[in-house]
Structure formats: C-alpha cells, structure tokens
Image (cartoon, rainbow, N blue to C red; front, top):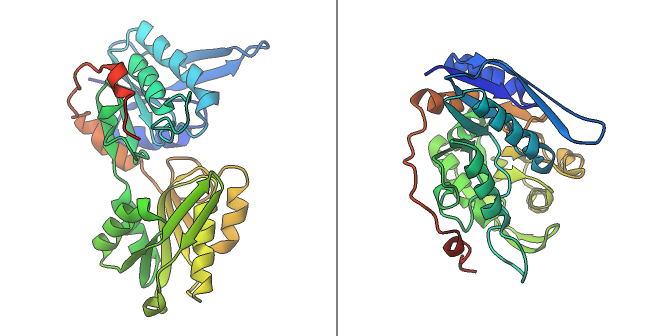
Length: 311
C-alpha cells in the first residue's frame, strides 16, 4: 500500500527525513486559525486509498491536538485506507494514577481520545512508569521504539572514556543498557522528589572514575531540575564537567538557560525540535514503517476496570 506522510506544522523536517528513508510520498498540511480562534486544516495531497501517517511530536499537546484530530478526520473522509499517528514524543504519560481525590487520570483519557481517532500509534521511548506498556492504555496497535542504542552509539563516537550516569533510579534502564552496549562503567544517583521543581539528589562515591568523562543520560529534560542538581553533585566530587545525552528535549520555562552552563555539551534526539538535536530518529521510525506495525490489536478494554490502577 502506498504511504502518504503528512506533517503537522513544525514537524516538516522530521517528516521529510522519514519520507526519504522509507520512500513514501510527502504531502503538506495547511493549518491556521480563524479570527474567532477556531482551527482550519487543509490537506495538500490526495489520501485516497493510501496509508496516511500524520507526523506530530506532542511536546505542546494542548495547542496541537484539535487540529491533529481534524486532519485525521479529513484524511479518513477523503478516502484514506488507514490513518496512523507518528508521535516522536508522546505526551500525557505523567498522570498515571490519582495522586489526590478528584484528579483525572489523564494518561488514560488521552489514550482513549487517540484510540478513537487513529488506526495505530508509533512513538519513541514513552515515559512508562506505572503502566507496563502502551497496550495497557491504547486500544489500537502501538509500536514503541527504543532509542538507547542510538544514544549509546553517539556517546561512543563523541565522548572519550565515558562514565554513564543515570540521574535517578528511573534512569537505571537507560544507564545500564547504554553502558553495556559500549562497554563503559555506569552509576545511578538517588532522587527524592518533593514537588514538580523540588528534588533532592544524592550521589555515590565516584572517586574511582576521576579519569572518566561523566555522561548524564535520561529520557526527558523538562524542568531540568533533576539534571541540574545531578550536575552540581558531580561538581562537588570534582569530576570532569559532564556531558548530557537525552531523548526528549522539552526544556520548559527556561530550563535550557539553567542547564547549558552546567554541561560541556548537551545532545538530544530530534523527537522534539531543539538546537541540541544531534541524534536523528527518522531512520529508526522508517525501519518500523516499512515493516508495518506488528503489534497485535488488543482486545476490548473495560474502561471502568482500567481506572482501578493500584497506588
């Protein structure tokens, strides 16, 4: 089946690279707002009979999702054989349980919306915490790509004698797999979180690795608080100025200005467009697209049961 790749505004560079890798047709999507604030979308390509892949990284989802839904509906009504979402960064994974009475479990809510609009979902390194996999959230086929081999290969090519460091316990999977791939030592710091921007970091004794270059690795840099405190903990032990390698470069609310002076270099994938992008993901996505999504479609989901997630 012929593929048509359509980028939402701001995703053109990633979509162009993706189309080039998998030999797909690259279309254009026009989106703007009417004077009253409502969204206008227009497909500048013929989707009839094709597998349409809408490319939209969801780093600012509330500003993008409605026109993404409109574009998907337009493609389907114009005869698309299937309509898929390619989201290099997938949002709304944070709120995965009710931390306080009355809260919405927005990871579930968002998954229901996406599942009602698209035929499949392809993303990289979603921030799974209490959910074991995307298939426990989404009722459409999903494919989760792992970028850690690409991060490891970049570190091997650009950093001399790296010491891979995870800034908290959740990053253990990153630090361990990256270190194993390139035969480097690794360590993990400990984090106690008191709020969105209030954390405490403790570090083990790293004196045995003074001759190495610390490389902090993580999946997401949002507020930057954890990475900043981790860098300062390394400085307290008189380690070399660290490098930082991350997957999703969100850098909200001045985080980049805080982090940049603390590291000799910050490298990210291009899942979210940012000047730190050094590790392209389009080839990784193209490999999966050309094989098609192989995840089996899950069975019916009882939404009432899904909300009974253990604390």
